[in-house]
Length: 289
Image 1: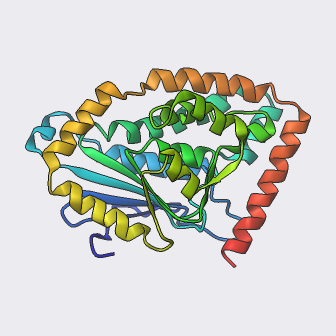
Image 2: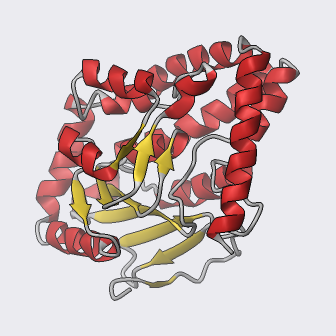
Image 3: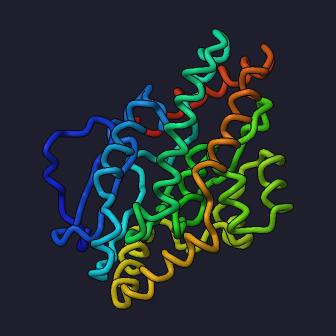
């Protein structure tokens, strides 16, 4: 990629790959750097920890923002899927043992990350989701938290949690309602169907739709365009965080509802989740064969 070079990190990451520009004003984080048969491209706790640790390190205190430096963060994927959502294997184990504490801890870890994306790492970062493969459940929630969603044609996007009696509890409703009317947000959630990226663009969920293979170039073009007028985009971040704010407290209260709903699931729902885990595992083998 012309705009980025490999970041020489102080320690290697096992589940993500990070590339940064020489100037430090653009950072690309690729999920699922350990993609391999049997490794499901979902929100595994170890990957979330590495992602959030890197993202936290990018956050600057308020004072440097006055210098007018606009930065960009791109969330992409190394796997053929963008992200298939929450760790269903972990969920079923915690639900079956009634482990409310660990289930809530996982959910809180998720909302910490999406809130970071939503507020722009303290305000001076524009976050961009680059979707080149299917984005489902929690994977789509991460994308929805970003300022801009760039998607390639022909990928699936959806919130299928209703299929096993749950709802997407890590920000989907809050972030969707900033992009579409609440009635449509509820329909997308309660339908549980997988939409095409073309459909999501027509509804206003996807900001930029490009042909297959053109996603990276589209993001690079977007970054170049915004860097020509950094002060306006910094000001827009500040205005957005006032007029379109999704607070951490809002996300936390909703995810608490998700935890209680999850713990109330019966055997039928848990068996459905088990089947989805097996399907994801089979898919990881086919995608990386």
